[in-house]
Image 1 (cartoon, each protein chain N blue to C red):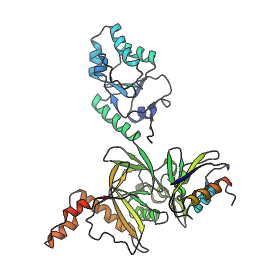
Image 2 (cartoon, each protein chain N blue to C red):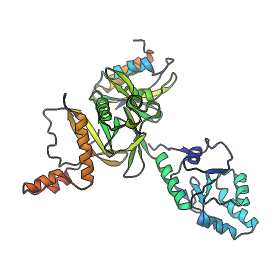
Image 3 (cartoon, chains in turn purple, cyan):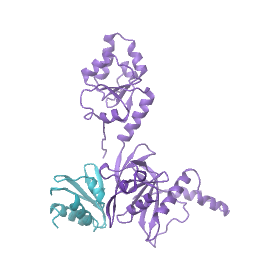
Image 4 (cartoon, one colour):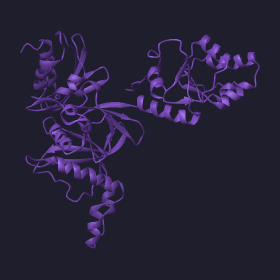
Length: 321
Length: 87
């Protein structure tokens, strides 16, 4: 089930600082569905075979200079041919004043015209990154998102296992809360997942026995964040005496969120076990591993043993939560 | 996986006290239970999650469960909603 996400033109105008030259209707009502953009180089010459009219179109120096070659009448015709296909909006870069013919074609076909002071490359980069974030595939997961020493950790586990309590303890130790209970996750690239909270419950935490608290009010601005990437998933589960927990840290377990692979660590919970400290260590260890150091491997070396690299490969098993 | 749609009919919807009754009921079951409104799905055992959906009277939601007691879970939650949380 593919859900089509959209972003309003109003939001794009606000986020990347565009100036409105012509707007046929409320920009709040104009929805953009495509994550791609287009520079109408070939299309201006009349090659329209693969034209995708869901994309925002960017007019830079090149397009503008090309239009310069024509007489006024020809120019209107060239632009009209393009605008008749109803692109959602046109952005003119480098503070170029659009041709009168461009403006009249825009009015004829009700195509919004926007202007930017940036160069085409800079504008394209910020527009694509905004579109990728706003139109990213997303999912809401039950859990807590915290940032510990700069690592974004998604803490998951059954209700009542102590996720919120652990989050409070981490916040008290100087780390940051992003979302409690419901975490909205967006996949902004095949490597990066970004989590945030639904706006209406942002930075509230439910603590059993106390009720609902506001982490931002109670602990201050330094204890919260709006969004964070997800570097690792921490799965809290009640200690099971029969289960074998990882003793060496040689296994690389992964989980899948929106098609991306994320390392997952299962931490057994026992009353009296200080989870916040363990999670801090997990965060630091995860970063150290990303930087290429593996404590288990060094220990094996000191002991004069061969590190079972193969096992590490085999150890990559995907578990779901 | 077992699921059912239900229209929330009491005036305030799934807010404040009705929400706490709902979550309490959900926590009685072993299955994983979710509430879905439009394209957002949250854990039915979490108060903030359910509150964040902003379910007002007249909204149709989907209650779904997965686990050993999934049918009992969905049916009794639906019953609780339909009774207008009068229990």
